[in-house]
Length: 126
Image (cartoon, rainbow, N blue to C red; front, top):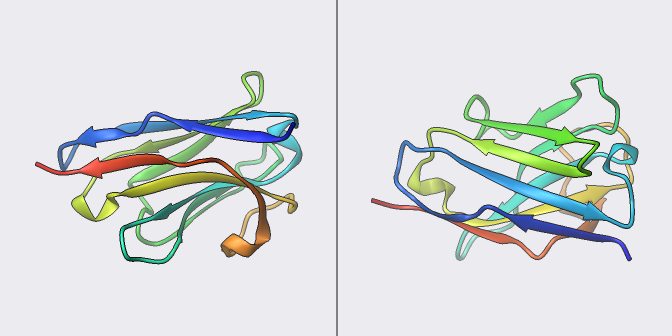
């Protein structure tokens, strides 16, 4: 069974860091590009970051998180990570990991991703 399971969300203060994990089962994460999306209350789903299937540093970050978030992958653990630094209240959202049939990353919209996790809540508040 193909599955993605996110973990690591929580309530944090502005300016702090948090790391999300996305564990895959039923397929190997180094065979597809995988990424993170987020959805804040009342807003549309927004791209966060993507990492390609090859170990060549292929990543893509949406402007809102560029320089603050880092996406990575541990093939041995079949798990993807999102390191989030300098968190802001505007980062508050449900974060979803997703897999696409593409090998390389780009600013693909959510319609290009065919497998989704259930989401994990991140709340940034003082």
